[in-house]
Image (cartoon, rainbow, N blue to C red; front, side, top):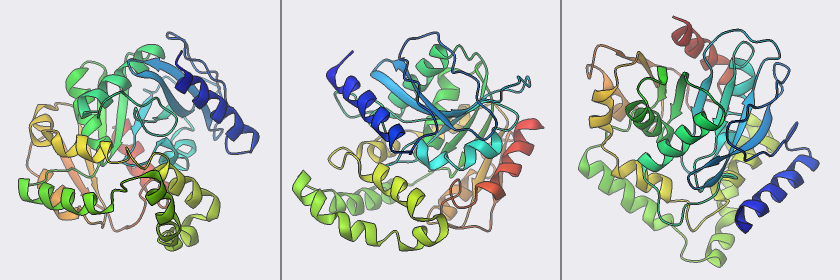
Length: 304
């Protein structure tokens, strides 16, 4: 195991002591299954993947229900903590997992910039480590692309899909987004640290809606590795999302809340008969601020 992996495990243990996690049981050995948890009890663990270790949160009912497990894939930058409120709601009757992409959260960072295929491959490694042969997918923004690619890589393993946003950008839109993001990219850790108070100040609305604790966790995960935080966006922009989406044959629900990408996501209408786009009235964090609202919609699609 790398020194970086050991350091991440030590950090995870420290977080648990601080009360951030309900329970942590680090285990990077492949072929292991997370221990059962009572409904609503969000646990954490680690498993091996092609880039080292992959960290994930999960809820697993104590009594098996026979329902297909769900793998949640997060937006960039960020981590599985963005699903922390959603997991116990959907996880009352099935195992629900939220994994950190390689290089985000507590998952090891690859030696070079990642691609969406890398993210999906690491998630496939996680499925193998947990001995999961059939899953449903819930992907948000960058995670939407990862879900599409994982379904392409492992079509027999993926049963149903839920996508929050569909990044069907035009080349000009990608160029505009990359230009704006590049302007915010720090050139050094000192520069990144100097910007933190300004960035935290922008979380005022989120603090009101979610409370200081969760808002801080989300803020921290977005800024944990500032010099590499752009890798997720770069991977998403480089991915042929339209081509991947056309290859998806699984029943797919695309959630389109009121956000900056609403018009882009709406382009998923008519792509294929297996894809349904559902407009939503909410803005803000879909899986953090509206977890109780969106979970029944996702459950209905997965149980159809």
